[in-house]
Length: 453
Length: 183
Image (cartoon, rainbow over all chains, first blue to last red; front, side):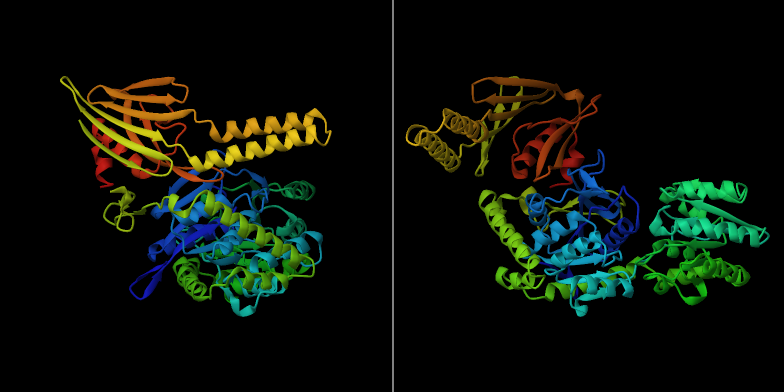
């Protein structure tokens, strides 16, 4: 049971996703920074993910963040093989040994997330789900994904989306009541993304593109936009960071228009070097065709770059109007937006922009808002199996019955596990606290668990 | 000779301190306890399988392969659940000399492994994660070795049994600062 710290409830949270460090991306960053800020607020946070290469077992990260790299190998696109019940024993063990009060799953793509939320609901834990992406409705993949999401969200206590567009999308896809879905945007580590100490020369305008070079990120748009802008402005230069299947098309475009000296292809950029690439430019160009939030825009704005972006998904919600120029995902409109950005560039003060970003987007604020969602989730009434089964039955004529069967089997397996290995046989782990006087040094806090004395 | 012990459903921990004429000997034993319920369930399953095999073969005129497979499955069940290769693991600490790890098998065979005190850099308590469970393990960091040496290779005793052994190893190897952090 969560205890209280002052007038606030102290939660013990298990973050679950297939996407976590050493991988880099929006979801990975979100989980890491949110966990760090929740730890600072006095909550206990544990992360569960699958193994990455030889990284498996228990690892500790900054601030005493404990990570379980469960030795399940990734199967497809960094996802573990969907076994439905295979993860039940390990999830049950972690929930008991870490004295977890709430499970927070991230990303609808994540198999591990769906399975963890399902098992946690079976065991009577409160669950929260965060959706980080937008999905379609028509193609086969989306139909299947939406059905899985409907099943998972039928049992969640509360859900979080990163933008209002994302919330609308999630509510439509899952049939979840809108009052159960909260909008908490992403934030940016402004300490990591600082502008260049000296203002860049305006003799040459540098436009930076950093993204995976795939169809979804609008790499095909770049192929048409870059030559057009280069012909209009002889003093414009492009820096393209990132890799992917569409890189070949960009290389071909560079050869065709003889832009080798004006379009620099960096290839894959490590996350630690993103800031150094960003501060070498004046304008950041985002050509995504679909985006729930787009953290890259925040990082660029924090570095003092003016952003030009496609008006898709949650992008219009990300930055104030004077920090971004929006365009339709069309080459002609994007060229016009870049023209507009170049004209307003002299009015942009990178340092002032950075300070505004510091006030607008903080992970501490995200954590405080997430804390409210956790409080709401814990206040939700406890439902028994029969009450929950009625929710699953509404998921469709055939799907509803199938979901009920899946949950009944899960319930039976959980009881079988309780007989095989009773909860009392699973040892609770002592909490590790980091003394403020000795940073990085860990000591045991045995106030709650005296078994180690 | 001082003695203390503790037990759970699967293991018994016994601690002896030998005050010998030449040198004190600190002995820690982890003894595997037999599970009667588990044995009963396995033997019942084997009995049912074998009876069913004979019934199908003799009365229903089924082929001998049915009987063969039921016997094979029975043997597999017995081997899987009732094989108790390790009966006892002992950690014997000779202060100033080293640590002897003794593994006693059901067959009566005993394997001994001596680690000189100078080779032990630090004893550590680790959390181990498998695809289905988590458990604590006691390991030794050995000078010149890339991998940790597991004290209990085949057993997973609870942490309350591992802590006194870990503390004793810390005291023997002068790693007292790590032992102090847990008390």
